[in-house]
Amino acid sequence: MRSITVMSGILAPVLCATAVSAAPVPDGPGKDSVPAYVGAPATPKAIPGSPVPSNPHMARPGTAAMHADSWASDTYPFLGPLGRNPKVVSTAKAGGLPALCSTVNYAARTHLIVAQCTNVGTFTLRLIDPKTLKDLATFKLPARPSTVTAVTGLDVDAVLTDTSGGAYYYLDDKDRAVLADSNFHVRRFAHVRDGEGWKFKVTDDWNLKKYVPHSCPTWSEPEPKGVCDPVTSVQPDWKGDIWWVTRKGRVGTIDPKTGRVKVVKLKGEQIQNSFAASRDGVSVVSDHALYKFRADAQGRPKAVWRKPYDRGTRRKSGQLDQGSGTTPTILQGGLVAITDNAEPRMNVLVHRMSDGELLCKVPVFKPGKSATDNSLIGFGRSLVVENNSGYRNFIELASGASSHGGLSRIDITDSGCRTVWTSKERSPSTVAKASVPGGLVYAYTKEPRKDGVDAWYLTAIDFHTGKTVFKVLAGTGKLFDNNWAPVTLTPDGAAHVGVVGGLVTVRDS
Image 1 (cartoon, rainbow, N blue to C red):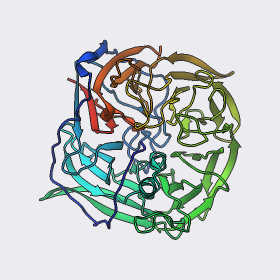
Image 2: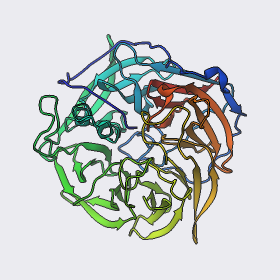
Image 3: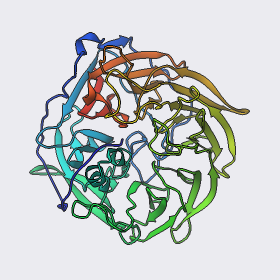
């Protein structure tokens, strides 16, 4: 979900494009030396628990956001691929259109994909046919200031650790994309069709420059004197206010009816990830603490409670900063979960949403080899955590290498929490997801190989047992590295993965 971008220019109110086809993502060496399919088709067995409730101001759960819904459950109420004669299709950039898609959402009204994608030179909102992967419309977005820093300061890490620019956007209850761009505007985009075809149309525009320091690097002034504080994520609460957070620890709201903006600043803290919202409040994690917020009568965010966690002593390999790498995950029973950054082992932490009380703390993975920068999967009374330790970015991952690996299921019981299983699968950097009716966890995996072949697989793990059910080869080579992009399931039974070279889709034939 993090990616390199470079772009500048003024946005037109509408940018349309006719359907554009593209060639498949090209494979690297070794495709014929690795199996195209491993395992056997899955038999669906549902995950126990009640459905994730629908935020009335977002699209239905499973179609609304990078983390699937307002609770950031990373679960879907429909089936993904079951491994029955699976077919893999991909599309690479063509005609200057963007490649890696950081966020892929599904507009149920039009049955089209709305994706935020990036390539060196662009940041783009795309409308995609889910079957052909052709672009039906595109809208160019502003470049992130970190791109300037990466180029002029020779600091590639600046852009590879930047989560701003629109990746954490959502679809509202009318399937309109609400996105915070790098020009400090929160805009709402409808996708509409006329005699010329599909196009994106800006229906609302809220300017945050009055409320956020925006002296950001530009090509003409790469080292400005002021402060630059990019907006990283937006999402509505249950009342309809649009909440937003910034990298340097600002938490704000927008009243979409009046345009009123309110904001508070967390002193000495940063926010790297997105946040979650329930009827009870908004859950935000900084690089120091977990918070529960509510808006007061004037719309100003107020911290109901703050719970510090062990942030460790350093930024680990497999993390984007020194702190929790997870977006908070809300669970049934009024619970919220994150991971910390403790040494020698990272812990899964479960708090009570009402008062912040810590209910349990479970260490995961091997000492000195535990870190994650991806949200927990949460459903019912269960969580799944992924180990990203050993992965930094697609540039630094050596050929044939992988992360330290592991995914663990944690169950919350009356007496605390326990580890149910740990899979040895290596999912270097993807946001893993789960299908509730299928009972499958989907990860994007890569095993280390002495021959240097980079073989990337969509991998289905049995949620109940932790056993690998099947693996489908997406492709080989650096271009199939997802570089923090998520697995996304869509109601038509497909799984989509944004990769460095483009977009990969796996579906049963």
